[in-house]
Image (cartoon, rainbow, N blue to C red; front, top):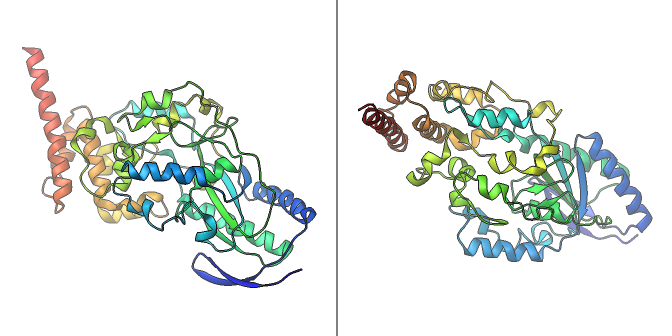
Length: 382
């Protein structure tokens, strides 16, 4: 055994690890155990990837050059650390990629909800507990099991919160392929799952990457409400409803407001209508069960929530990240797209004097939509 010391950060904590050399048999046995432990911890699959992400690095560069990242400046920070794991965490030679399913209900119910413009549609991943917390906790538990088995080793846990190319890593580790909508698809269960990573210095045997099985299908491209999938495997985030309702901190561009429909937090259309998701099944994970009736609730009710109520109803949820103002902004747009009723109009007028200029502007737009609809109806009556 050869020993040497280096320091690696684990969620902000500096840990000194001892570098060891392992036999192939030790790593084979450990990998088998990792697969078993992942299943016991609630992950549906895990895979091992090496750290050569050159192809993904080129694609990322092209995507950034095209300005498809919009205001997500963090996508171009950190230099090459995003695509070169060993630069982000010194000593990394492998990545354990894990998957956890989150679909809370049958897809038919979600599709039906999209057709009811008086009710809110929230991306299915955000209906339950914040997935960052769930997956990080399980990955740390996995690291502890490995440590109990072999002693100290170098690692760091990531769940969609650092410069990591999680989709490219998942594809390399065999968890699925990156589809034309840029989500990872498993041909046995579809794409309704979260990803998490354990960067490690353990030289585990890598898994075979998955090949694409999208074929000539363009369902996701055709169904996208704002035509954000500008080409197969190429997403212009600036047009994407998930970006517009979550990442975008300013006003929602007028050109996209009508297309947003009743989607107030994210969008699932490219998954809901993907043929591979006919194999998807609702998760048994209690943490991802819908909370506070957010899977089927009136827009008018959501618009009435003051900040204290909103904070209470979104405690422990990923929705918290957008803040109350953007939440109301999104609901105002959805109310503008709803069928004109006295309750919808009353809800909108209740926020006309709000302190937020951005919110008032969206409320005024929504009201104008209903006024235009009324004018058109009067013309038809004549």
